[in-house]
Image (cartoon, rainbow, N blue to C red; front, side, top):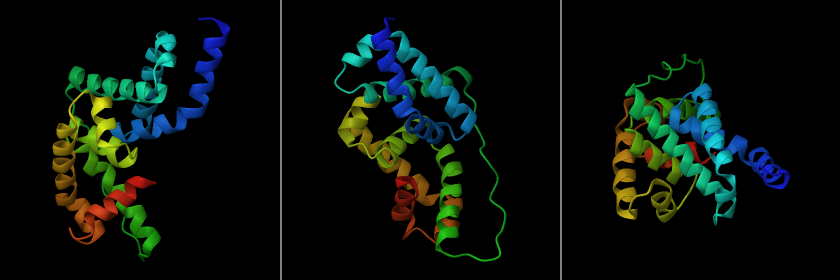
Length: 182
C-alpha cells in the first residue's frame, strides 16, 4: 500500500475501532472474540482498502465484513456459546441497577438467538440502522430483516432472564431497545 491510502486506513481504524468492537461484542457476546472479530474484519478491509475506500460508505462495507466474519465463525465451528451466569443478587434495586441488570441479562438472551436473528437485532436496534441498511449489510431483502427482527424480538421478550429483570413482557420491548441504545 502507498503511504496515503495506508494513512487513510489508519485514520479510519482510529476513528471507528471502538464502535466496531462494540458491535462485534454484541454479535459475539465475548470481549476477546469481539476484538479478534474486529481485527479479522479490518485485516480483510486492509487487503482491499482501495476498493473499500472507494465505496459510498466504507464503514458499512467494514460492518458487513464484520457480520460475515462472525457468520463464518459459526459455520466453521458450529459451537453454541454460553456467556455468563446470572449476576449476583443485590441488596437494593434502584433504576440505575435495573438498567445494569437489563444490560447484563440482554447478552445471554442475545446469545440464544440464531446468528442471523442476532445480527439483525444488533444492527437494527444497537446500530440503529434502517431496515434497508440492515438488508444491504446482510445481503437479504427488507422483508427478511422485518421477519428476523420480529422473531428475534419475540424471543427476547419471552426470554426468562429478561422478563425477570424487566418485570414482565409489557416493558420488555421498550427496555430491551433502551438497553441496546447506549
